[in-house]
Image (cartoon, rainbow, N blue to C red; front, side, top):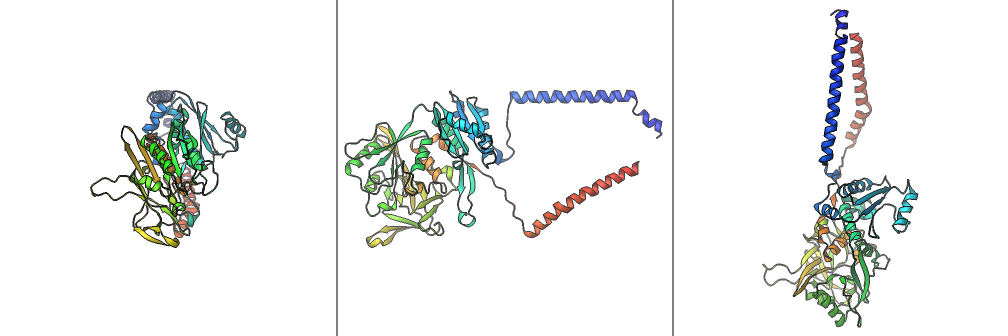
Length: 488
């Protein structure tokens, strides 16, 4: 082909035709983009490409957000470099997208300390509180969720690795619960029974203090009060639930009668025992026997699931299929020398159990009874029940809800953060005060991807990245350059 013919192919006529085609194609592309955006605005939709990136909300959360009539303020006081910042931000962005009533604000205390301090002062919260937390506020009420509460951790390999692995993200469960708490018009009252050496909500001590458990209750917008059953004192009429945590001295007949009256009119009861009262039964054992609970005067050991190097500390992973424990199946409770909590053997094997067992020891469990000289004899072997619950029917009154645990120390300040103890406490309270709708929100599984490489494989990958890929790219570039030179 001659040079004149080559130049003719780029004649003004041809150039005009090409230009018109390019302009027309550009206009059509712009029209398609505009139409696609209009369609997206009128029909918004999200697609989660991976399970770990799925921030879709449960139907319950959507119902709670859809029913909001007042504005709810959500303030994320989080370091943007924190591991949980992105999951928290993405989840709450979905909350904000679902409800125009929820107003989201992101504040990084490290980058904007002035704004972080101002927000806490506006909400009348202590400025010295933990840095990373989420605050929900409405109706002059505020609820705080700390970063440590957002994860369910697996401590099974903590002794070997000194590291707890995050298995679940509990953000939606806690956030929706907080929204319900700050938007409720009234506070539910919960009583801590005192007078017999029980754990106290105000005690900040390590093993015996219950201030962290009390903080969980307060985050649920529950109003806490101490309740004495002695003398002429009565249980407040507006008290919804009583917590009897680790008593160490016996109750009188009059005190037990007041508890019976409370349960018989539909009051909820959360009773926790421990090994301190083995030598001196509290009277609650016989009281609960009337409701089909069998409380053992024993200590349960478990050679299979005992924490290495810590005698008496049991890692309890055999959890029952009950609304309280379903959300934490696959996790572990950590209990210290628990007593057995079961039920009498039914006369007919076909009868349904009178109570629901929430946690068992493993098959290697042993219940050792206490006898003279602190020497014990094995009463039971095998799977020993440790925690139980019952929905007790009352004649002409609402049913009562009862949860009984063989250990009270596992909810003390020094142990409540271990395993799934905190989550169990929160779930048990939700069930007892009939907030079962919040039990339906399960923590989201955290997906982990791990690649294990041998030393030889690591060496091969190193050479591939440092030599083969750069060398191959350079070689292809030289070949292309040489081909262009040959054409010219």
